[in-house]
Image (cartoon, rainbow, N blue to C red; front, side, top):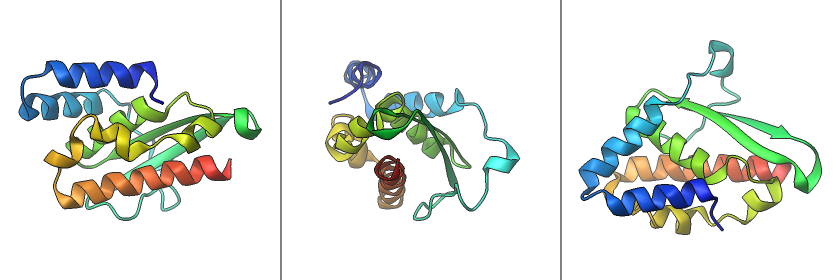
Length: 139
């Protein structure tokens, strides 16, 4: 179950000829993200388990299982900031119920990300997904 925006990203990745072009696209996605404010880059929003510094700020609109999940994020590493943008494309706008059902590993596999990320970056991506899933589970 992927959002239309994520399906568009899958199509874009299929169109790009090689991983280097895909890597640049992910970085460009990250560059388009607005920065977090200083007050948002705090220990409570920091994601542990990432080689670089990562902050995710969840925003839940509404109540119960129909509440909508959104998050904003930032990193000090360009590729990781791009991975935040990829995760936003996957999760932002879903209800918390839908977010709980996302098989992020399967969806991200459609982009072949794990094949081209270092083990540290892959672990960081897993940590970000775990944080998002945790927020959805608690909402």
